Image (cartoon, rainbow, N blue to C red; front, side, top):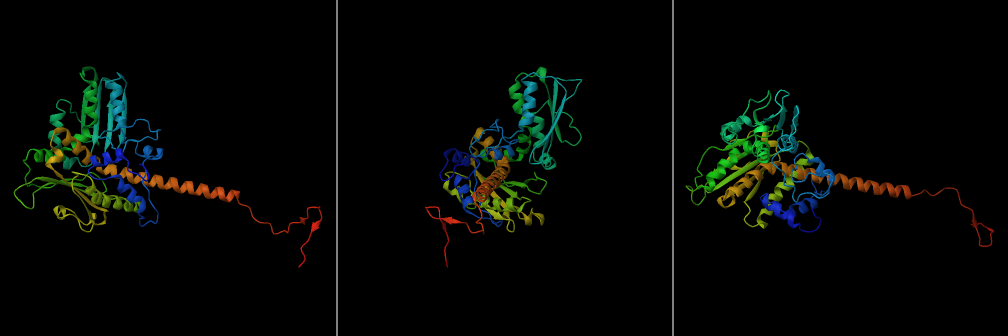
Length: 379
């Protein structure tokens, strides 16, 4: 982030993430949430990068202060990607069992048995797998990973395996395996967007993906034109957002409100609406319960056919929809990190002032004239 001026690179990434321009970050710096602190968002600190390091595929060196503009988060896990690359591309052959977790609650496991060092199996656990399986994720797994599916380990939902010695294109295989979660989570989004791009969008049930243990979910549905009810020309994506900490909730509410306000300044950006938790959007009002009443709120993106006209743009919109919650989480943590850095810097300044200060002695100091005589003031 850049303080006091527009950053073109951040603005470009903001357009890619639908509507959040850098002005929203500056607006957050001017607002004071209920916790009583002034907040300023700057995503340039090394500590901020390290906090979300497991998300970032675009920048390998976390020690650098240079961060990707807007912090566009990747779809895969870099730890699993590195382990796969060592075996498929680097030729490493050794037994291993590597288990890692993502911040969204999903879990990865890479296993290489001692008796078959050339076979690499990737296991994945998704909390929303039961819902995703009904929304097309099983078909995506059987089609895109045909001949690679395996029996998942206990506690995991899906698994794919590959023979490192019989792999023709190692780099493409690594990319395919590391995008396993992206393809499964993106199945309902891609199905709706493909129907929209083909002009075949129609009324149907709302696709509900409960992808966080806190109860947060994303709702995907086709919508019609109010002026032509028979014309379904848009897809609405609604996120329910919540955070356990009150500070995060205050920052999140400000950011979501600015999403709704700043999209007007970006040409061709999808319309964005922020709704308080007490007034959920009409499209999903019958799907939410009492648990969602305490959430921060809902943010709705409306995607039109022009936003997904082409395979590349469609895939990009799917990735951005999947990364939105992580993107929001990352910038909140950046704001808190910068806030703590500024507080520590202010404390250090105060300590320096205290160390330079001295107390005036109560004992009267002897005063002398220029000739050396003692000077005594008489009352």
